[in-house]
Length: 382
Image (cartoon, helix red, strand yellow):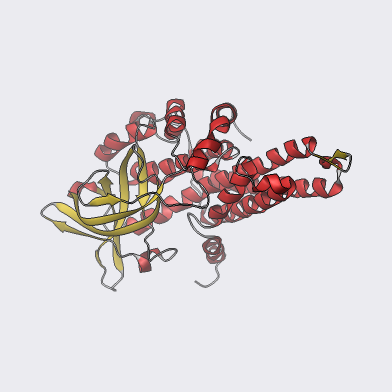
């Protein structure tokens, strides 16, 4: 059951998505252009500060409020939704969870206002799901400064004109058993030795910013260490558990958008003398789509409820992410089929939905990783 504040937030974001985002996002998407004006207006609404305490310039809400906003945005467009999700879940939350008071006061107020974006540099060109085994980026202390060398791949929000800082996971030493000691270091945009590549040419999320980053003797002050030295991997795991709930909400939004668009279309489109919505084949397909959305929404609501209650939620987050990303992909495929040839045209939202859905089964933990996590939480051998 949503409280009054959650209901009001969802309504306001739904209106914003329909009235502000929907009329223009297709053009941004076609041009592969970052929607700065939309982001600015989202900042003015306070969306970037939803789970940030008021003392750091935020709205003082909870993480579930962010999830509701992501769902409503993704009903219209996932590029805008992932920009918000990455900015908050991966940019702000690590600083909020693990940062010093000085780090929080330096970065969070501007982040919460949408004036700057943060990013999280984790994935590497030769890595993937095996984060500790695939990590090659290093950071060495030298004269009170961290000297960072390495590269990161597929980093969202890392190269916009308003990107302010990237939290970079790096190997800062070796443990006694030979395993890498991984720490997280804040690297402000524009730091010497920090290079941002050109934007990727992507299949989907075309109006969002995703880039490869490189570090060549990049120096930042020692106090830019985020949290405890050697705790970077544990921080990353906690960050991803929360982020998976947010990605699940985004996936539910896309899946719901497919239902919305399909209902509108089958009432307008006629074939063989009547609306195609009168045909049982269409009705059954849309009924299945709605069932997927309903199930996936319940899954992420449940994970969020446990998270906010301070209960273990790793398994529930993995289930929510797995179920909702599957629902998004299945609904996007079915919506495209319902639209026929028009579903293959980018001018129709379902064309974008189909292109955007696949990454939801990959980003922030692949579907295979989610199954591994669920199995381990059930006590099966690692």
